[in-house]
Image (cartoon, rainbow, N blue to C red; front, top):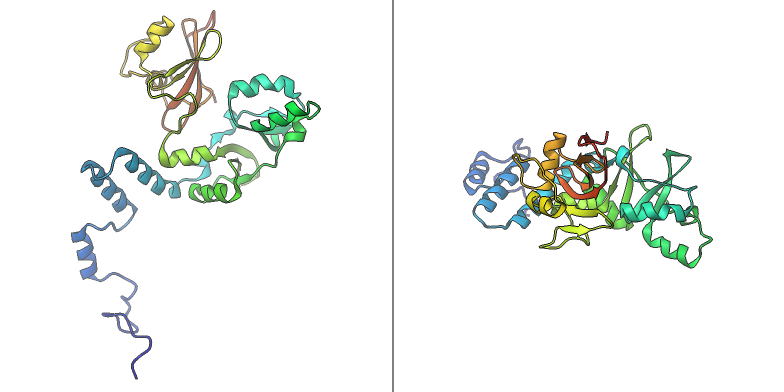
Amino acid sequence: MPDPYPSEPGHEPGDKTKSKKSLVDRLLSLVRGEPEDREGIFTVLDAARERELIDSNAYTMLKGALAVSDQTAADIMVPRARMDLLDVNEPLSSLLPKIVEMAHSRFPVYEDSPDNLIGIFMNKDLLRHMLNPTLTLRDLVRPAVFIPETKRVNVLLQEFRSHRNHIAIVIDEHGGITGLVTLEDVIEQIVGVIEDEYDDSEQTIFPDGHNTWRILATTELQEISELLDCEIPEGDYDTLGGWLAHEFGRIPRRGDRHALQDLQFEVLRADSRRAIWVRVRRLPHLKAEPQAQA
């Protein structure tokens, strides 16, 4: 009677090399160019890009998708010092200018102390307040999701999708708040920077009130100098983001400010690689010194 559970060809029962590739298999793998590990996969992707087998967008997304499994929430979070918070005891009428200026869709809400976060406020809930002015910020606060610093980004993405949640508060091993992560932060690690409603393939400078402009960090300095009638020092940079990185001596962070003549440059949005959006205001009597956030 034939054996109903035959051994795999070349592997007899008790063979200690059963779980390992044979020398022939390893040689064939090298000949075929099959990657042996993650570094091998990146090498294959680099080669495919060089040979134009995949375009730059596909290359960025594939590398980003592989990289997120090695990243944690702490790697991509917005640090606590740069979180924009709302005080639950403050009237919504006085909070509206801040909400509009910050232009976030969601805000963490605290009570008594920024260390005591009680939930999340969503901008769309302002419609409820308009219909019922008696509602307070406390009435509109939604429960917050807390995650550890060590949570893997790929796991976090799955949780965002399954729970239909877009923001999480990051805490350390002692329960202290260390930052926040949004769904957009996670996706940008894979697909690159996601531009917002201001984005335009040609326009990069947008008026944002009296003597105020919102500018993409990729904007050429010459264009900015001509529009704002200012003289930006020349150097090994061509864009607004490059100049700010030179002035700060590092990658700009959200909240960083720098003064030049009567102009104040404030980084509105940045990631781990570069500045993205900058607000420029014309204000009198400014000192031309970098003011980096701690």
